[in-house]
Length: 612
Image 1 (cartoon, helix red, strand yellow):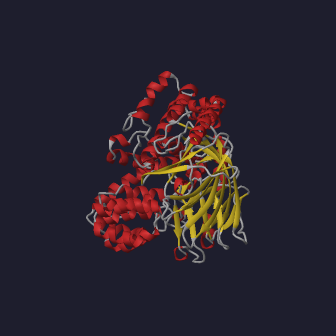
Image 2 (cartoon, helix red, strand yellow):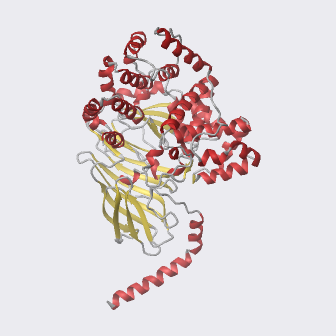
Image 3 (cartoon, one colour):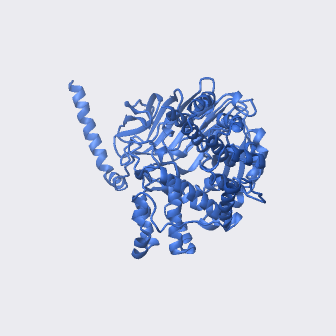
């Protein structure tokens, strides 16, 4: 007992001494303290700055077995890490000494935390661990679920707080780190990460990666499979399964032009390369802006480049989101609202102002629907997500209300002044994570005078529900014509004669018919346009909603095929919701039972709750 007391006393003295040495550092960290309700980490304490990750991908047991060596910015003698469902085998310091740790589980959304007790002067810790059953970030696809049916596929989706399910980390967007990785995969497969990437397969299945720009944990990404690479330009290219790589190369041929357009507006692209990986249809989102390697869904391969605005959106994240990051998920609009704005500016540079306005009007339509259906407290730009899944912020409020706030400011100050402001904003905060309040302070100091601030009702935009009356309302000439054509069809029951319509015009046409057509009218449209066989997933998704609404059974075979092979939440969730709304819940359940093994855990969980 005396020895234990003596040891404890010595530890107190040593820790106190070391704390004094680091008083200034501690004070500096506390000055920048951010409270993140979705991370258990002590953001004012010891931080992670660099990762060395060594992993083996075990397809047979569907596990990642890894060692994560973290370099620390030491402040306190305890370190809190986020984790969700990991099996922690050991934690050591840089000299190989075992460090004591505790594990705590909290809930299924946030997981729990690991408390590591540090000795003074610990510079690095090494965590040996493996993933457990069904990590929320990972999807393992059998050979039979791939196009080539030669090798299985694994891919990750770390946003928003899912990195902790495959990497013990401080899983907050306010913590940024660099990383190197060594990944061993079965021979014949190619491993890719959000880092420098190989363009050829390694004979021994071992790959090395480096990310020299600091990123938050949600941008950690890994994909393994039978992928091939095709270059587009010196700094861009496409990865995909061999059966898809040529069509993807054609579809994304204008990516270099997009980068140049964005650079002309907002400054140099700072991530070295911009490549895209086309994942299987089960990928739960349209795209994920992982630095240097955007993940995209094959549902944007329409064969005519009509859906490439999604690529412009993911590219835009190279400035808003990846370069300047929302500090918490309550500030998510800083990521997505800015990105929608840049996306539409890129598309205007490539395809003209009218194309921009069509996209803006589609955006406004989504926003109006969200404002009609969401509770008022869920329509704030500065979200209140404490106690909620941060994925709840993914929707028209962060994206579209955020966009229209910026568009309204642009109209007030003029485009030239607003472009200069944004360029200055990205330069000032590059490779940093900021809050909504940081942005507002910068906006007030560098762009808006007091009178303009009050006239724009900035505080109401950010902190109150709904839309202020001063919102910019887009007006597309071509969409105005579509509205007249819809009215004519409702009256005459005669399908319109279309000439050179874009995909967006067909989408707007079908959207405007929701709630206004019956079985016979839907049949007339299908006979005229063959919508049920459309190769354009955006058109098909809106069309299938109309078919469910009108109970147009000839399209139900296509509906089931689409819902069982596609895992993109944007499409799948509304279709399930509409089936349930139209008293077809049993059919929805039957489809879900057939589809569930093809869904990523994110999509699976989102659908499953609809049947609770």
